[in-house]
Length: 222
Ligand code: CDP
Figure (cartoon, rainbow, N blue to C red):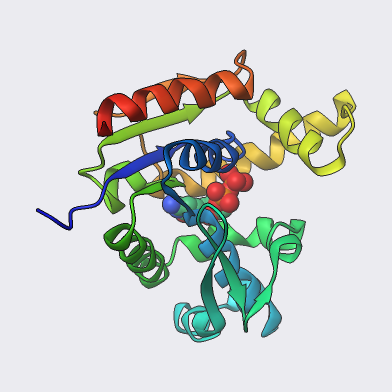
């Protein structure tokens, strides 16, 4: 098909480094990066602004709130805006991170995210990261990678990214619990496609995992 675009899917559990890796891979290959998790986070942020206890949020109220979400182009991909404004730090806050799995379970919210992601994939060659990209969103992706790492190492990296300094053992323990809870809440929507290549990054430097996927990407799409 002349307008068939290429997709590289990078899935994996919470804080496994999918987004930063996907962004770097997209930049190197000249693809566009789409962070599907950022759309679930944007919908959660929009709904949180509307108020009310998260346990009372209905699917329709999330979809209504998400009407103010749009995707803006960035240098190597897209980022969500709320009412035209940047929401990066709000979207990554503890409050949003703690409620995003609840929102991501809603089937029509998943349809909403998937149609935005597929639209981007119909216009550009994309590297998309998430939980179900290789299984549901782009089952025909040219390359599927499943990134994983030891939970405590994922926690350490997430804390390092947030604060810039080496975290204490107690902080790592606490963050590991949150990460494992989110993995559990996301389990139903997450999966490794049978044809995905599993990369355990526990003892890999970020640059190594990026190089590995760029190499695989070149082989698969070149
Ligand atoms: O970066 P991190 O692993 O912390 O999470 P994320 O990729 O920003 O995704 C945030 C949340 O969105 C996840 O915990 C899932 O609940 C949801 N998500 C999903 O259900 N399906 C996707 N394809 C991507 C994210």
